[in-house]
Length: 329
Ligand SMILES: [Zn+2]
Image (cartoon, protein in one colour):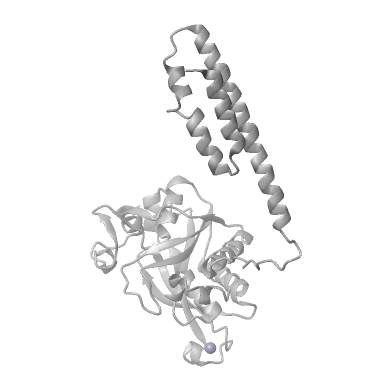
């Protein structure tokens, strides 16, 4: 093989190509893994030939790189000549956050303002964290496979964000002020008010001398920050296995301010969620002394707040990702 001739042919072909694609092809042909030069290099038996072939290879690689840069500059110049910067541009559509993300951030801000820490823990949970630690009776229907998505006998998709409170209490000693936010799962048939996956926010406060008055004060602050001054909160007795006493709480309708309208079915109130004083039995499982510590917990569905805030009649709309809907927020 006459390597001088090989080199001059290669240089000629680099000079003749006019596009980056053709140049790449020429590179494969003259310098690629299967090119005569590379095969020659692999079969070298003596030092002198090796040095000579390497010199050829270096020369060709340099020429290739130079030609590549040249073609690139040419392409830019051409683009510059074609480009008329005075033409009207394409209008870019500005992105925005999903309404649920917006509400979530707003809720987080309110809690941060109250000195709470925002926590989101795992969505795949143990049965113990989801039910047992919260004193959910073994016979409770929410434990059944018809209501809950089980991964196996001990593992499930969390049905509420209370699991995050258990995880935090397991790891820390009071005082604790946290809000757990995140996605939760239940085997619900999709309807205007329910979806199998939804978002919850739950707050937990554990400290010395906490009473239901603190709970009510926190709820009032939260809903006034969320829905505006003048909102009122009322509590009705209820039952949850992990709080004692337990309440459900309502907030004055933000459309009619309590006067009564079709939106609140003329009651003047909206049901918002559940709350209560943390049951001493839960504290005992966490190794807290119930004589020393007391606390409250409350929770509600973020999807429902977002729906009420925006007057959305069907929460499935949040999951359909129809841009005509989402672009309105
Ligand atoms: Zn109303």
